[in-house]
Length: 211
Image (cartoon, rainbow, N blue to C red; front, top):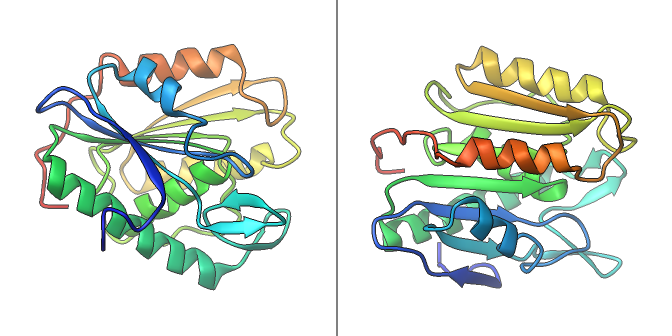
């Protein structure tokens, strides 16, 4: 898979530093989380792809047929494509660790890649993910760090599905942290602080396994 499989932006970091991928929400683009990523991991090389699916002009990473109803075939396509994109950049940069951060639809594609390629990301922050299906994790998440942030009144990502995702990840061995707020789908200050704590100091990376 090519490093240019997605339109993307790249902010170079320090040699030997982590590689941080950031994934935007529906209707945003590759600019949405670049600055936030730089704040979270100042030394990292940051890569931000733009979703390759248009939903009435809004960029997304995979198709859906309704709110919370995913086109599972297209999710499989998108997951494979994104995993290849990530791997190609990892091979080029040879970072000390690989991190991911996604919001909403971006959190969903990040989570799907984590399920499909458990060894690819050392740590992943999922902000308001919605996984309305039982994940089929292709291996073990032991030693992987996962942050989930969510709103208790989120009309798009029901709290019970957030808790179910947490349980799935824990059952597969992931080190999971969950940060709640009492609002909806918006990102609130405590989530931002949770992400800062999660990445700084960054979790100790596992030995890269050729992912």
